[in-house]
Length: 170
Image 1 (cartoon, helix red, strand yellow):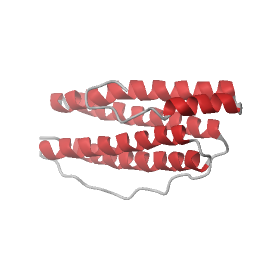
Image 2 (image 1 turned 30 degrees about the vertical axis):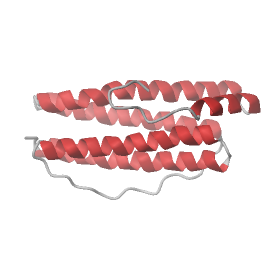
Image 3 (image 1 turned 90 degrees about the vertical axis):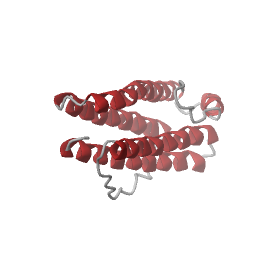
Image 4 (image 1 turned 120 degrees about the vertical axis):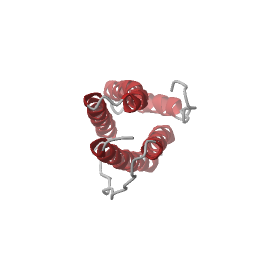
């Protein structure tokens, strides 16, 4: 059984994950409109992963006797200055997700909830990878600037990205 406080915080995380998915869809649309299908694919996969995370958390809440409560999400930002601005926003968002997961872990530790700690560990490990990927992509884009050949090279690489299978590396 989870506490009312942890239940509430996990429900807030569910909402954050759905909001994240929506935000990444907006980034996907930005790149689709620029005919950069690889970048669009990258953010499509990001959006799918966030929805999966929301469902994982809802499942955990249900399995531990909590109550699932959904709330509204906001319209995402649909205007970006340039490619670098989108990738910077994505990195900042991943950093915010990490902080949010850490707060959940701190709460689980304070409550001595070993089950929640075990559950949240997978998200902490994944956030390390997500931040690294986002930072790497942003730094590469900063290096190449508006150079079309560099953008197209990264775009071609990002077209290959797929939703990782459970338990595998990205």
